[in-house]
Length: 137
Image (cartoon, rainbow, N blue to C red; front, side, top):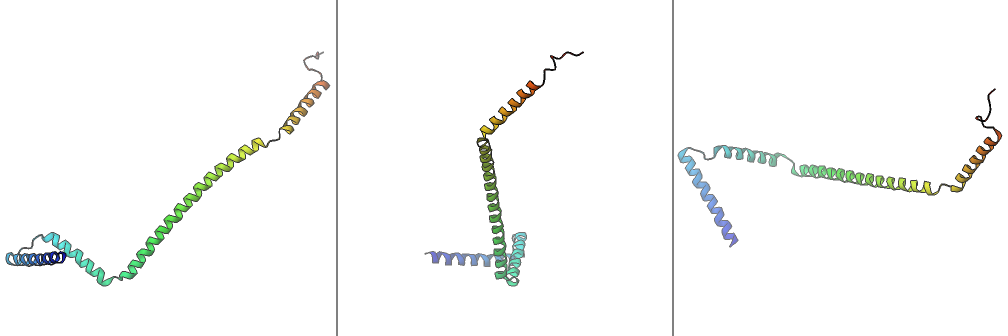
């Protein structure tokens, strides 16, 4: 059934073409002249390309160009992922270092230092008299 429809459609197109050609020849008028001229130009360009362009080489160049673009996009995305991971790890290390420095600070040495400083201050006060208590002569 499909073959019969295709054959009948082809015959109808051929009959339409013959009728149109006969009408245009008899009346000396070309129907849809501007659109048909533009279509003729497009078809001539396509015929020229098919006749003169090496299509396998063109296809190879286009595939190579597309692969280069895809490779560049993949490299760019992977670089962005690496930089995002780097920023995340840098923040994590900074956070861990700040926590480690605070908790690992020796408290005994600081207390000893403060105690030594207080003792030194007391020793200074004991060896030097108060300036306010001295009378000026």
